[in-house]
Length: 153
Image (cartoon, rainbow, N blue to C red):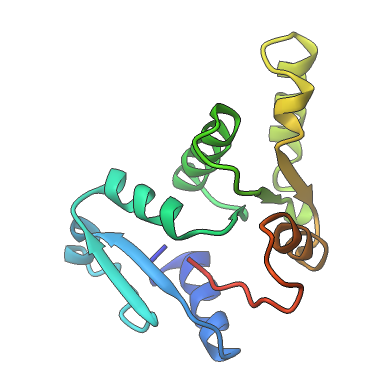
């Protein structure tokens, strides 16, 4: 993401500490608020959130939403909607740590039960409670080699 605060910053720091690369993409308004993680391997400063999401989507091999707030929700639903519309064919994952997304999953299943969504749409996302299970599935679905390292974006 490009931020230094919260889970985004923690994941970036842990990734780099483990020898990984972090590509940060952040709107200049957030840089001006001093939220940018200047320790990223690459830090792209863009004009706005729309440009940020476009660049992230272009650079990503897969999408993974971890527990987060409104920005995470918005980005997760957008890449999922783009997938079902055929704008991309990259895997979309939801890491349901400690049941964080249980309520959301119940809500989405209600959408299927009440025929506002289809089971096929639900099948477009991979959900696990453990990163050790979800990450290899995303790597495989993205067509990357099993030894591929996942960089945090």
